[in-house]
Amino acid sequence: PQCNKPDGTPLVQGKVVAAFKDSEEVAVALQDKVPFMLESKMKELGAKYECADDWHSKCAVDGKLVTGQNPQSSEACAAAVISILS
Picture 1 (tube, rainbow, N blue to C red):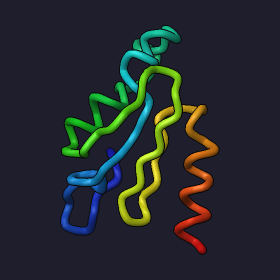
Picture 2: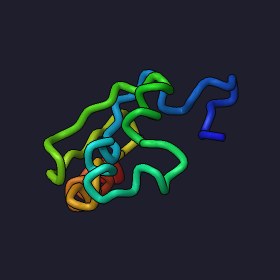
Picture 3: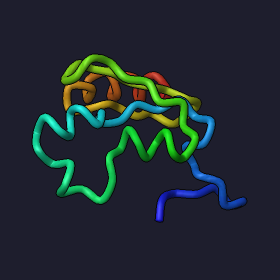
């Protein structure tokens, strides 16, 4: 099960998010090792999925929800969290 709001709708529904791209998952040959592909799952759950080119930084902020595409996004995500907390 994924994270849901109290009314049962997906937490990410209608939210801008970034997550590991399906093509990045394939590039590291993990598509058959994970329970689902994040890009596909976010779209399925109704998220407004945003991404950068493979292996580039992408941070998405929607209110207090901060998401990153991949490890290259950690610095941008950390800066976003600091900004929200300041």
